[in-house]
Image (cartoon, rainbow, N blue to C red; front, top):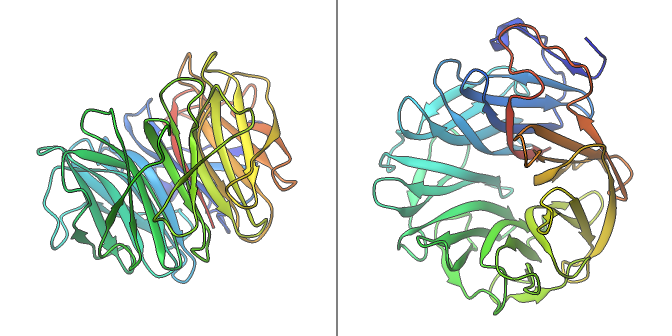
Length: 366
């Protein structure tokens, strides 16, 4: 086995614990047909866990609460056909939780996004039986309560982001033809639908909010090359379309705010090829500059996260042709990026998914 990735037999008890998990990736192990998380102290070395062996779960979102030192992952349970929420208090080594049969939450949900606002968790998704969007909130990640989405009509939420006094959810209507954005000023208890900028890409895939809650962005895809696919707002009420770099031809899928660097970062791909990854950075959410992502293989980034204690940033996604996992890291403030996973000639022990059997859906940082 080469340095850089620790493999193991299945099950968290068989793996040495990561002492300080800074980055966590949530996804799906296509080899064993079950949930996976990847843990890293630096964005370079990674370890594999399965939070729910034998449950056939798929994880779509992850978040971290620093006060509780608690990681949350959310998704959908293959055995239960219901939303799942798992939590870990030991840096991702072991997990508890499962189907979201909490007080006030009805079943048949599927969660795609989750965030920590500074005082609470918010998770979003869709109710599969009705096609209606779902929002649930929790102070601790253990007890959850459903809230009313706005609008409460057919559609779904893909991602949610939050800071002090401002949370933003991004999604689409049931026909996948119109974008949706809603905001909350009270940690997700009540929500207000917001008008999306005219000409904005028709699918807002992700949102990011400054820790102080003083600026928000959403990024999207769809529409023609000339349609702007970033929008920003100082309060979440009124949104303005912004140019990326390059200004056209990019679909944006992931976004984050780096408190350490005081910058937003977004990741996406050239829509003409689907294989050329792009990274942009902005100090204000309005003016964006391209950064350098050096890779040896094709890479379709889906998510990005920045550590709060230093300038490390991780982007994760797939090879669009073979659906193989891809991961890149920046340790110089987002100026330059290097592919770090999967490394060449990696061998995993029996029972692990191996380097080419992972869907990396979302990355979170602490």
